[in-house]
Length: 171
Image (cartoon, rainbow, N blue to C red; front, top):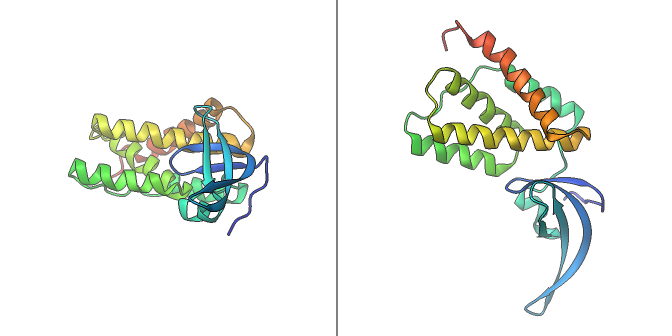
């Protein structure tokens, strides 16, 4: 189980990036639970997560430099065909985003960017693509100590290079 320290940047798969601001004991129904208190970056709210449930909930540190190479490989990889049925596609993508794993988020971004480039993305697909890019940008910004906008520019640039390679290829 990962141990986090006050001041650590953390990624929650649903709420995004935050900073661990304290570790507190909370009493509930006669039991005392140790909890992480996380200040969320996106909406300035606070999130309380039981320490013993942190791993199960997917709480983790931001992507490392070594893992960044893996993300670039994902972007460079061949897009996966997504389900034709929008409901199945949306459910699958939402599940992958909830996992909070940067690998899956990177694949979602790549696959939806390809779908959009092919002119086959619905409005819902575009919203999911935007959300996936935001999650990834928040994580990269936290890892590198840069602004989210700058991280988003890096993602967009990597996708633009890849999309230009897709053009004219038979997928």
